[in-house]
Length: 203
Image 1 (cartoon, rainbow, N blue to C red):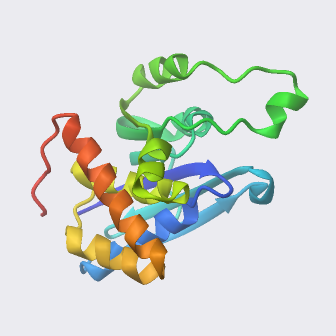
Image 2 (tube, rainbow, N blue to C red; image 1 turned 120 degrees about the vertical axis):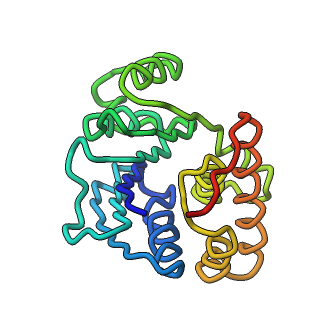
Image 3 (cartoon, rainbow, N blue to C red; image 1 turned 30 degrees about the vertical axis):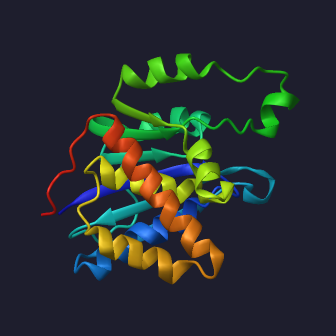
């Protein structure tokens, strides 16, 4: 399998943790994976992005236009990441809005989610999910990134066995967080199934 994955969000959303979850699980499945991080003002809710390359790659950064999957944990970050997409790109976007400080400073309004979605859909295939709602239902609103992992798996975008992904969740988290994150992963997986998308066989 060869995959170029870009994960974008803001500080505090678990962008790096999601990148580690995917890259470590890929390596546990016997695949080569490399990951790089780009941080903005993460401590202030600034932009954070992670590139994960699974396959026979040596450079850690995904070239613009070569992204197979863009995962956006925040809609404005989805728009910002669109410049890195190509005709083959699939985007997964969480609909939770986290307006950056710059909007208030510049007296700008947050764009309508439907407008953001329409702009993205003109360029790439888009799957949207209310990951925050599912995370809260799973028992911990901080599990948005794990909901997204389950959603990616359910869409057939991660060619990694489920037991390895869940094993990585139990390795990363501890205590009650393990149960909440496993529930969140399953919620994301079921949300993908609700779209009528069949799971792609593991290659």
